Length: 504
Image 1: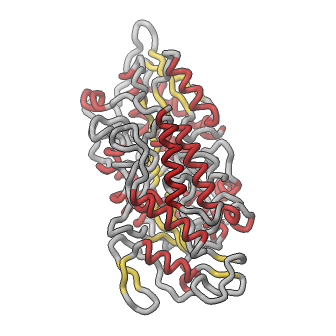
Image 2: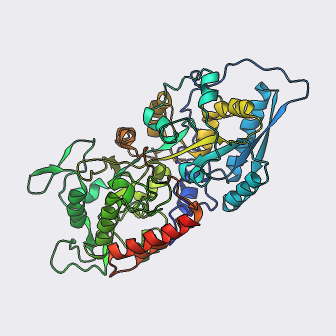
């Protein structure tokens, strides 16, 4: 099954406001369109030049007697493959060297496809790079135990982290301890929807904020949860004759509009992470498990595809009519879609009247999975102080604006976030028209951060991470592409295969 972005979900997509190409090893067609659409738009000025609370003091150091210390910057365990991004990285490194003559930056670029192997070799040979990034939770989880705890350096340099949401700081702790990263680019999740489809079905729109109830067609007020979403999604799913999925004579073999699309890059986010936080690795650090909310989510998704028909199968997902395995919501034939904020990269293809709403709850609790990218320092770095100086420049100093634009990052610094959306609202295409609808509910994106899966992120560590991912891909393909399965039986098989991978 092809991934929406042809790599794990931690890979970054391109926002249309940025003059940049997609961070993937293969640029999705829609991302290219979005980038070209925004080609006449100046890069975002979302970030101030320096975040004083985190960035290093503006004092130019002297060159040590032995010459500058060499700090190696390794890419790309996450985004950063594109030529335009590499150029930005080099420019940022040169700008840093100009104000830090005591440090020389060597950019070590290995394409994403071979980056994990190359990084493994460097670790094994005792020649690790110093700084690694941009890197997501999944990329870092593949090398659990190899990262430097930054807390001593944060304390030593009196770094003030008060401009970050505590949820995001906690994402980079290990067992609640240490600080293995400073937040940089984050991607909250939210519900995308098509108001016109709701209007045609005479349905109320999804709630605009968390905690609101939903008004059903009979006038009753109900919790905005996955039972409600199922009922509404079936009413929004139409066959070629215009019958919805609740009506007699509905033809599931000829559906022209689907009511719901899950985030399907990873089995851990296709419903699962949105139902509740969990981990496939038990607390003992060696046993495979299936979290109860995730089991419920996979059953909900499976029934949505094969029984209730409000979610498309993988076979349909891969067809040109639904964007050929890229982002089905952009086909304009999906009423609701759960996805991350990076999805707005190419959403202009979905039409000019989409909006954002609150994610539904499961058993009274909302969970909003989050993707995040930052830069890390290897535990075996020979120059941790100099590496930390460079890391601060990247995540909060003068380098951060260019880097955020290059990787299309939503800033983790709270003081940068309002101007980000202000710029987003003003972006125009080469014809002078606004790229995004004027009334998009951007506030719900940041409101979802409080519900982020920080304690147990969907991309958290698993033993033998890459092989374990292979198991998840196998069952993602089975669940979305095969009718007639007993989900519990399949999950028992998956748990056994995960355990075998963990044991190795």
